[in-house]
Amino acid sequence: MAFTDFVLALSGLLGSLLLPFAGLYWMLRVRRRAVTPSAVRVPAVAPGPVK
Image 1 (cartoon, rainbow, N blue to C red):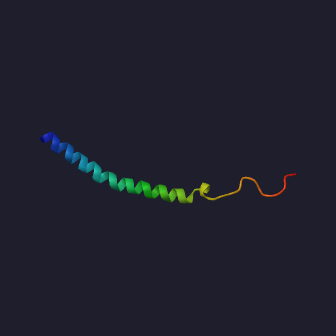
Image 2: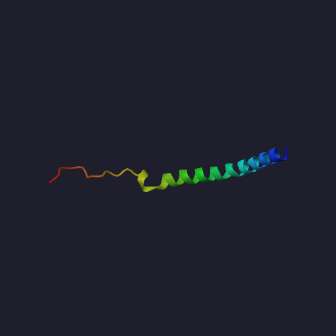
C-alpha cells in the first residue's frame, strides 16, 4: 500500500512538472521553426539561359 501511494504521488508530481516543460519546449520549437532561414524559399539556380 505504501509503495503504491509512493508511485502514484511520484507519477502525479512528474506529470504536473512535465506538462509545463513540454508546452514550453513546443512553443520554443514552433517559434524557432518560423524564424529559420530554411523557411524562406530561395531558388537554387537563377532562371535564365545557361551560357
